Image (cartoon, rainbow, N blue to C red):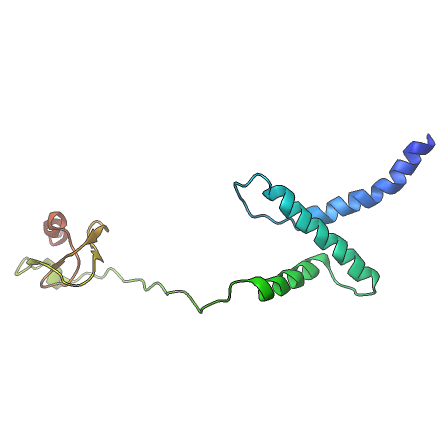
Amino acid sequence: MPQPLKTYNVHMDGVDLFDQFVSRYRIRICSKIWWWPLFSWGIGAALVNRWRLYRALGHDISLLQFTHECSQEILGKFGIPSIGPGRSLVLQKNTFNQQSYDRKDHWLYKSDKQFGRCKNCGRRSIYRCEKCQVPLHPECHKTYHIVS
């Protein structure tokens, strides 16, 4: 085998390992920005290089753990602080309410409250049923109160 090929093969192992480590935990955030893949690869390459230097100092840590600790450190310093848990979604059970289907005294009125979601179609409505106190559109009022 010619000497240039031997030299190439000797040094190619390091490049192969580097590419393998970079691709092992790629940053997978989609973006329409053309330079994002280059940027995310650069961050991954910097993490791999830093991890290899850290291990050369005698620390035994996996690449995944090192990446996790680095990201936690960066997010802790520069991330947006959490303001607490988001609003919780209260799922309402669709129970059969006999009063809603008795066909007596169901009148629509214009509510002075904020808009609500129509119980029949889901669009916003300012109208409510006087008896049931559910938001409804005038078009949906009749179909909501009739059991088929």
